[in-house]
Image 1: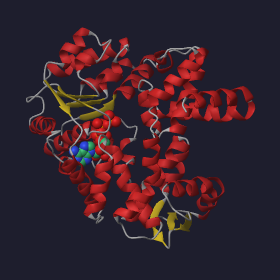
Image 2: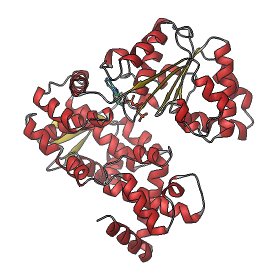
Image 3: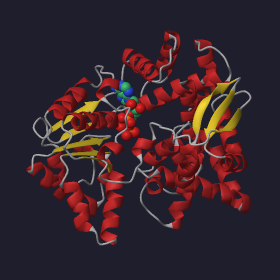
Image 4: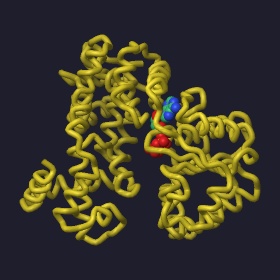
Length: 439
Ligand SMILES: Nc1ncnc2c1ncn2[C@@H]1O[C@H](COP(=O)(O)OP(=O)(O)OP(=O)(O)O)[C@@H](O)[C@H]1O
C-alpha cells in the first residue's frame, strides 16, 4: 500500500506541472509496483510507453520524488503487458459523462470514512438525515465552512448513501465553476434545453462552492430556475460554500432567501483528538500502521485544514518508504521540516499580493478581481508566481485565493512569467524589487 501513497504524492506533483491531456494519456496508465531499495518501481503497458516516459518525464518524476524527501530519487519502469489502468481515487472525480452520477463521486468520501467530532456533528447529522429521506428532511441543506474541512466529503457521502438506498434516483454532483462553464457552453452551442433537462431531472443535486455564483448574473438566473423546479418537485438540493448565504455578496436576494429555506449548518476546524482520529482513519484506509506519536506530531502541527493534514501524513509515509527508514516521530520531523520551515518564515498570500499591489500602485482587490486589463493581468500573474514560489500554497489554493479561479489559470500564469523571465530583463528587476519589499 505504501507504493500507492508514494505514487499518489508523485501524481499530485506531476499533475500540477503538465496538461490534463498529458496526465490522462500517460500517467493514469502507470501502475505503482513498489518501493525497492529506495527506488520506485512502476509498471507500464508497452516498451514504447516506457521509452516515452523516460524521454519526456524522467526529470519531472525525479523532481517529484526529491520533493517528497527522497535522498537519492530513483524510479524504474517495468513493462507489464496488458496491465489494466490503475485505479486511483482521483480519477473518479473527472469523467465527463454527465449521466454517470456516481462516477463523479469520490469513492473515499463515504460516511464510514468521515470522523465525527464536535466541529462537524451537526452537519454530519443533517447529512445523514437527508441521505435517509432525500427531499423530506432539510431542503436545501446548506453546509458552509473553511477550506479543506470536509464539505465536499459530506456531500459525496450523501450521494453514495442515496445511490445505495435508492438505486433509481438520479444524482448529480457539480461544482459551481463547472455549472457555470456548462451553462456558457450550452448558450454558445444552442443547447439550453438539453442543459435544463439535465439539471432539472435529477433527484439529488449536489452543488459545491456555491459562493462562486456571486456576481454571475446569468448563472444565478439559471440556477434560480433549476432550484425552483427541483424544490417544487420535492427533489433534494445540497449546497456547500465557504461562508453562509448572508455573507455571499452580490447574491440576488431571491436566491439568498431560497438558500435559507432549509437548514444552514457549519463545519468548524477539528480539535486535536479529532485530527488524530482523522489521521488514524486515513492510515487504516491505506492499510498502513502509523505509530501514535507520528499521528500526534502531525496533528499538532496542522490545525485548520484537513486536506493539509492528510497531505502531511502522506508525505511522512512516502519519505520513510523512499529512504528505507521506519516511521517514527524523528522521521516525521525530518520529512516535514521544509514544509514547516516555510510556513514559519510565514508569508501569507495576502502579504505577497499587497507587495505586488504597492509596486504597481494598484489596490489588492483590483489584482484579485475579474478585471482583464493588461495593467492588472500582469500584476496578477506575478502575484500568482510569487505566491507559488514563496508559500506552500498549491495551485488550486492559489486559484481559490484569486477569487476562485481554476488551477489551470494559475499554472498558465506561472508558466507565462517563467517564459517571460528569459526574455524580459525588466521583469526580473520587477520581481527583485517586490521580493525586497517582502524582506
Ligand atoms: N471529518 C472528516 N473525517 C475524515 N476525513 C475528512 C473529514 N473532513 C475532511 N476530511 C478529508 O479532508 C479532505 C478535504 O475535505 P473536503 O474536500 O471535503 O473539504 P472541503 O471543505 O470541501 O474543501 P474546499 O473548501 O477546498 O472545497 C478530504 O480528503 C476529506 O476526505
